[in-house]
Length: 266
Image: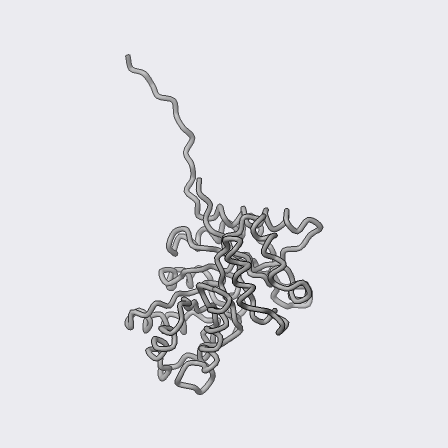
């Protein structure tokens, strides 16, 4: 049985740990753990990275590369896309990333979605828009509106579906999958619980969470890349990572029926 592709969002290893070690240092671990794609986190760069060298190191190990930026596609009160989009696309391109992941931001009826075409055409980087945890970018309705416009304009923009983020705005992940599943090209996986202090936090999945995620994936194209975006911690970090990668790789796999012996009628 072939494995479905799994990514690691490097923030899963802890922000301080990643900033201290540098994102390139995690490449060998990801390769050993059976990861297909590395998700670089712009907010975890320390400002001293050689992005081109980082991209070469990723490519040399045969990993796909996605560049994640804490950027809202639309700023409040602005009709045109965020002017920071193009320099961010350039940084993603320098890293050799095939995808750039951003948030939706403040989409309105006046937002000029069509103007994204010219900006995106200059770069060989595919744009993915993710549901975040904010009121403007974490609810279902703005995404159905956005992708209806994207579809009408036949623009090559996909969705990153973050399973856990819907909880911050009390949205149903199941309803979101039903309405948006056909636009999804990448899935962020994290279970979410409320801490004793009352704060929502990401945690590794239970068997029940994994079963629920399988149901969500049924509304999306088969075999989508899925990413670990919950804490990966432990004495043996490779073993922890490998275990979680294997669990996500199995999601949505068809059940294998046991072979039956042929019955002779001779």
